[in-house]
Image (cartoon, rainbow, N blue to C red; front, top):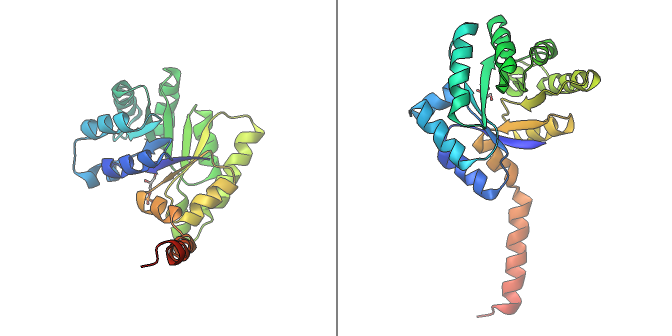
Length: 216
Ligand code: G3P
């Protein structure tokens, strides 16, 4: 499973890219607004940091506007992916953009049927929202597993991006059920890297070493 970061914060993106674990970036209007910076400026900066798919979301609600915005987003950089919400208009726009050879990430997916419809419309990626499903006591990971089974059964090339990840466990569970990608917030990636037993182990190794070789 590939790891994307779900943020528009360039410092966080740079930190994770430097570690070498990032294959892509996803943003949404909330994440861009949180940075308080111009959309184009932020996206351009991200394309200079990460050489992989970068999702930028449309804000139009009608297919025509989504397609226009999508074409503009795709012109920013060859790695750009147009993020489109799963509505009837969104499906229509996905179909149009896919005919133009423009990559799409259909977002706000909450069921296997929605994912199947997005794949049928030609989506490059679908983003089931695991965390938001689990917030409402639904099994988000089961939805990801169902989508993977359907895509495999019918040979869809659409890739699943496990999104709205809130915990390291949701990240690992996404990998276990076959998500192609998990897009993970910075804080969750930091938690996934660290483990108290790793820290404790390093301290014990250092103490033992210093007791013998660095006696004062
Ligand atoms: O990629 C989707 C993600 O940005 C939504 O996350 O935490 O707002 O549910 P969240």
